Length: 495
Ligand SMILES: [Zn+2]
Image 1 (tube, rainbow, N blue to C red):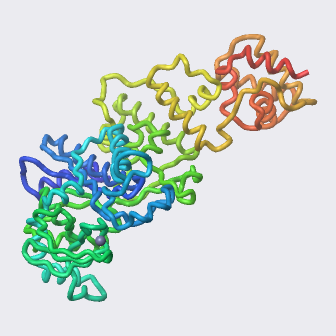
Image 2 (image 1 turned 90 degrees about the vertical axis):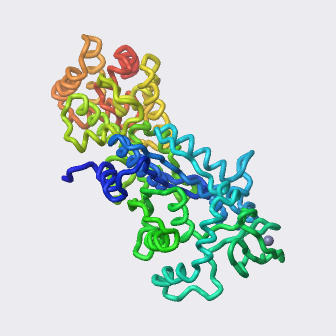
Image 3 (image 1 turned 90 degrees about the horizontal axis):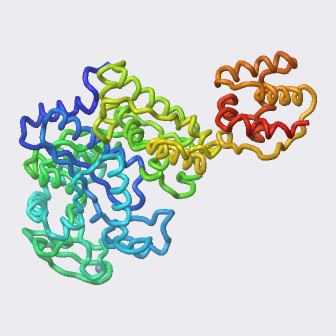
């Protein structure tokens, strides 16, 4: 076991390598090219956890989040009108929203920002479309233009074929058609000359016309230098030797005179269960989808408890129950003082609100599966009602059939022989006296013995009678939750 929790270890390293600073800057960024996948959320929460770790060390931190919405619209996602093809090549900030007012980028940005707030993540959002249109990076663009030779040399180290002679580290959005189907003809000082496939041609001063953008591999280190970034995570695609982080480090140092940030690779997140929502349907599982079935603290817990460089799956199937149980156990152990330092940190960093002094009393997800389906949630506390809402969503959208049931009004099957006798006995026993769950459970075995019926057959019969299926939630609990009277009345139909 390592000495520090992973986010604390990174925070420690930042302070050590970057030296004591008045304020540390931690960054993350995503291109809003469609619904933001939960895998991309890992980028943001990884940064958030490092930010919290630094703050817990009493350091001042700025958390910036870049919306890379000056990136080109490269392809139409499956859940969007195919007619959007006509906008390919425009900045995503200049593509109209597929669902009403505003821009395409804004639509997906807002949706994600709202979900981020729910999980307690509140960074400073920076819209790169605005930064670029306001020509904020002009001095950095000039540095890149002044050093094209050096940049090419760095990039060529990792290329099979060298970049062509007329290569520029620039992209230009055409002033006439607003697409990036342009070719830079010359770039010198603050001036860039370009021509577009639409026929338009011009020479612009990019201090005044915000249409020039650095290419990704140069843009990224330029922004580290601009924002003085100390930490930023990146996906596996950026992390390989010769990948954009590797070349970015060198470009930051040699061109922009900036010592690159500390870096953390994060692995992709898979989805388990809920396949009807996955790639085949063209839909993306977003943070919003995950929050429909998981409480915000549990969403955080999933990411906190797995090191960023390890992949894991978010379950939409029956494992949801286990994850809730694990989390509840962690919470109880936290308040009972049974956690080691690492687990304690996992619990702390999963929280959104300040941790109170009292152990929260919660109804388990598993128990709520029954309560929700027998309609017994009216008297629950507000927190339990919120959890019940997640349970309901899970049952409606993702739960495997074995978890779904409905208490019968009319018994579906005719029962005969031992089965019939056992059901009648169950009815009479219920009439006889009150039971705790455990007592009733033991009573089932008495009935089995009395009629020489196998336990498995008895349970199957009882489930068939009560919920019309051969499996269900714990039988004794179910009977007591539904209420003896109702069950007795139902079993009166066995004759
Ligand atoms: Zn054009």
